[in-house]
Length: 150
Figure 1 (cartoon, one colour):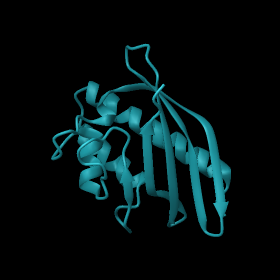
Figure 2 (cartoon, one colour):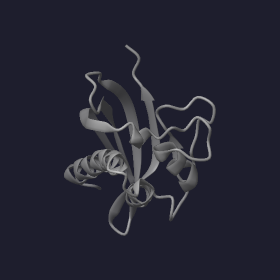
Figure 3 (cartoon, helix red, strand yellow):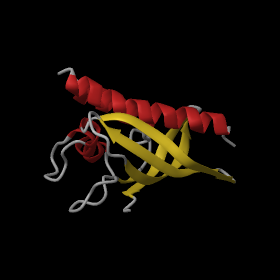
Figure 4 (cartoon, one colour):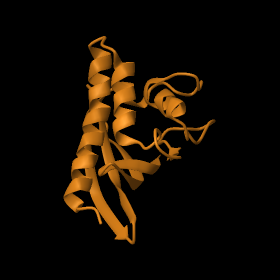
């Protein structure tokens, strides 16, 4: 079993990582390297298969490889990718967090409330992460997220 505090720490790290990529981008830094480190530390692509359905996809719905995930976060080989992490985001709140642990399965489901830099709008996104353990570190094995239409 995974302690709930570890899941909260992981989710805070995920949130901070997305925000950090945008900050590096705004500072004309090496945001690609920042995004690669983010993916390596939060997703299990390096050790096993991952299913990834990002929030804002229309043509290529799934990004089940490290390269396709990178394209989604910072833009790349897929035409519709403009860089989710390059929005950039000023704040991401995690709300209505639900955690399910059964047998060897750990799942977190909740809402990300995303606030873009210099805008008042809040974009709400429902997410589900299924975790795997890698060297005692949590990594995302399944990521599904979609906008909440109000």
